[in-house]
Image (cartoon, rainbow, N blue to C red; front, side, top):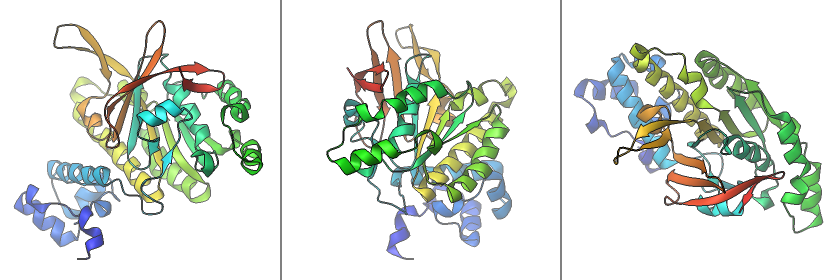
Length: 323
């Protein structure tokens, strides 16, 4: 086995003998080969139980996340958030591959953040952009067209270029047309979107960013209490395929999450991201936004690229900016 693929090898010792034999017989020793399939497809292919298949997929996803490998472009390319202070908080900006989650209570700036990233991904490389478009999946409200147009009209004031060539490029970008917008309302629609529509779009359009605003909405009301295992499976299916797209196409993935109340150790209530551990274990970087009467904050909850800390920010006509 060549050394270049060693980092992607599954540790067969963590599985039972039957699962080990099935993986060896099927030639599924690399996480990248496993994540090409949905759980259902893979289970039928290797004849494993549901629980055994789930353990294999979790192991494969963890390898994919920890390696954070993009095969088409350099691993360390970062995308600016359009706010220097937040870039520094994140260790330079948003890193490719994996899922970046942004959570927080209503009105704290999550959608504002997403809209800004949908513009920064289009910026010239000299401004830490990617000269590419974005796919924006709305699950709650209509896409905020008037707000994005306001931000677009302020692009040339917000981002300063050192030379005339870059400034001309900055001003000539058709920002609105470079955002592919889709409105969905159900889990099945979301799965169809990421399994069928997005792969086709990635073949025909220059897209390097996928935003789901929000992942919570479609999973919040469709499941009864006795269907929580099915919800966990659907969450994993969505997350695994997003990871797959991210790695294969060198994408940035941003998912908006909502918050729910939880009892803290001192018997008080605190806000925590929704969707529980089933989702949290599949997120690469978790960011939390909060607000007080006088300011807004963004905090790194966990990330492979930087330590946990927070910085204040404000929302202006131009977008999200440092305080």
